[in-house]
Length: 80
Image (cartoon, rainbow, N blue to C red):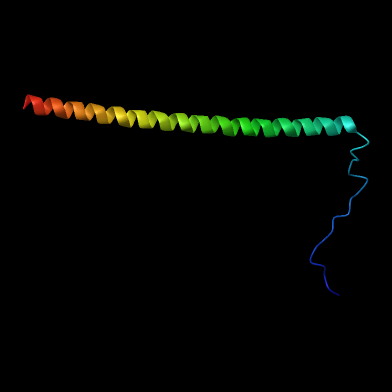
């Protein structure tokens, strides 16, 4: 006898709830899932903003450091 490669899941009415029997619970579950997805999106957006701000600070710091080093080199050259 050959074993099927795909096992089909047979619903068990004793353990599974019918969504039409409890629409308020289904709605609450859907709203909870929606809020969870929104929090995840907000978290991802906040992380992108944080990383972008950190990159801007690094770039600004590098530019200011280069300006300071150039100024110090010019002062040393003028003083020598």
